[in-house]
Amino acid sequence: MKFDVVFEMNHSTAELTLTGDLDAASAQTFKEFVDLASRHAPRRLVLRMDGLRYMASAGLRVLVFAKQKLGDAEIVMVGAQESVLETIRLTGLHRSVTFVDALPGRDTLQA
Image 1: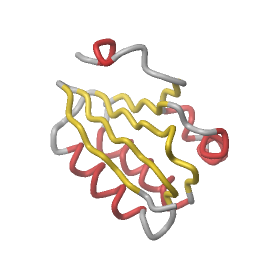
Image 2 (image 1 turned 180 degrees about the vertical axis):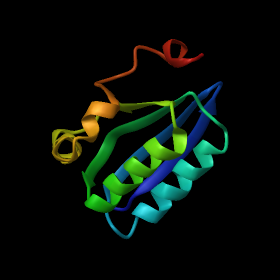
Image 3 (image 1 turned 30 degrees about the vertical axis):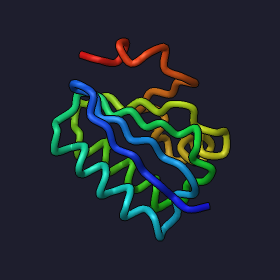
């Protein structure tokens, strides 16, 4: 399935909605959007992942890049499917991000 990213800035929260398969071929696109988000100096990066079916190791490298690039910004992963969660857990990255099934509302993540 084709990978797609939608970017939105909402106060101090950058949101990326990820859909499709995040593989080696699409990881560069994901990285470009993480870089775009970082230019806005967000306090939070929300990754809406309920439409993401697959994540390869190249996608994990971009998540590590995001953590490094954003410094102290909180990374929140919303609605990640079990197969994606398992990939993230295998690397230990799950210890430095927040996972939620859904956001209670946009206002709760605004700073």
